[in-house]
Length: 263
Image 1 (spheres, rainbow, N blue to C red):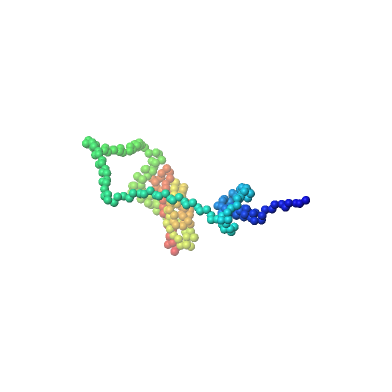
Image 2 (image 1 turned 90 degrees about the horizontal axis):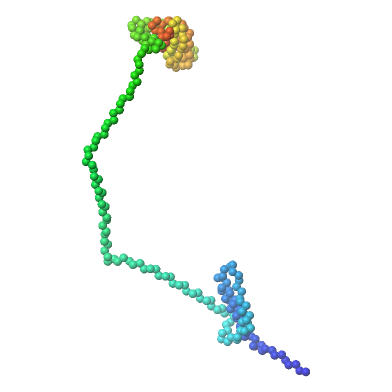
């Protein structure tokens, strides 16, 4: 029994379609390598379509002239030229031959004159300000408290009354000088001064009140002035016509001099 040998394809017949398959794969890889940088990173990687398998089985034998060596790359597709920019609209230049015509300014219409009334103006009337009314006070008899005060100056104007008052004042000054005491601190500091004191006397010459009118310049001197008047009480009685409501008020200067103290 004889066995017939299996038919094998010739080794030279399988080489053309294998080369074609390798060439097609190389072209796809080249296209993928060119297009890969232009795609977004977020897009999934490009996968060649499954139609390549169909091309492997049904690929016809390409002529020898169309074969390219595997190391040679196809030139990349040329980018389409961008559209030319649109031309800008032409602006017509002014005609130099036309003269510049000056336009006269618009004249403002003069204001219409205001008609004045020819009536004579009356002068403004002066205001007459009436003087304020003074309330008439009824002049009557003075109160009993002021009767002696008004009568006293009239009696003092007489020469006899004036002489009696001057004599009374000198007697009071002499009594105050006899009771005067120079403060020790004023003597130590060699201070001197003149102060005025006002005091009130009754009909017997007793001192009822003492008030310092002006200071002598040192507190100890002021205190001595007030104490002096009280110490010398009772003072000489005033004239009978000098009383006002049973009392008389007198203001005298008190002099503190270092000469009188023996300096």
